[in-house]
Length: 356
Ligand code: SF4
Image (cartoon, rainbow, N blue to C red; front, side):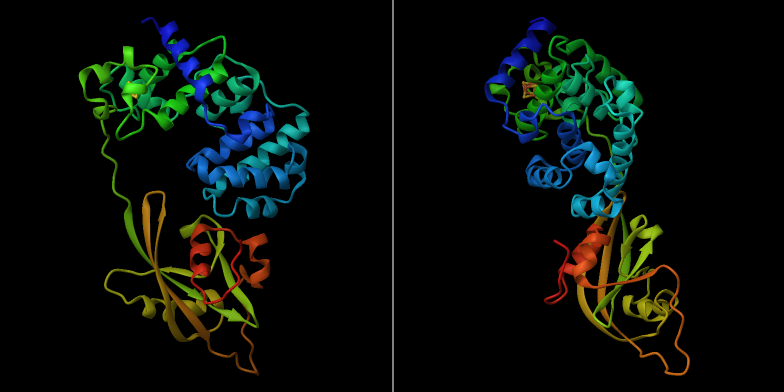
């Protein structure tokens, strides 16, 4: 089978049974762009309702560009990786100011937060540019199709996969082709138990003929996430919850105060000792609330959460609150605070109002 016929088989398969995803029906560059950004690191099932809601709230690129960042972040709450939302907002301003969407891969790449995969996907889907888009699903399919023994994350592996993707690309329908290859990786050529008997590429797939499709791509040894113990304190002042902006542990998001717990120390002792420097008042009684696990990139947080009853300030000398402290009513949290860890912590408050 020639590469041309592989591409044709793939397109036939895709056109017959492609998933009915709402952004595929729009033909709207903005709608497709939002879907591509949301789908990075997030599943189709989780994205679909959030995409609809985002489009209802910010129906076009102008609306997104005009919206305050905090509203965009609020709408992003729970999707994680907030840098994506910040970049999307900045990029929307650029596109709105230019008065037109990018066309070429290079033009898409010039927008904040748009990497090589997203640029190629958008240029091909939106403008029919003949560019192969390679994500994790596509890498896996191509590794298997050609039985490549290279780590697709290595520079050599990446170059090889990119060249194979380019050679396979259906230049008459690059957008559809890219989506077809991604769909194949997401639905049939899955990491475990690929469904080779119904695959449109089975006739030419080398990994299948070797009988070991799951052995491709070779697994690269990833370092296990580093465990980090933290303690978090939840305190209320006149019905408002106390928050701080933490650059180190949650990348500048608002959070309840968080502290690292060194080995051999008790979480509650660390909280008692460190609280005043951050919150301005000494911590009084602590009530255990929850213990949570929360993954962040290369770290795995193990968080002990306590309700903190602060000692009342003296009437004569009211302490000055440290800068950066925020006090928000629970009903206002959704507009200002959206970190995944914060949402988890607030979700453990008995009867507390939680954003979304
Ligand atoms: S035949 Fe199997 S291993 Fe090969 S591309 Fe299709 S699903 Fe993947």
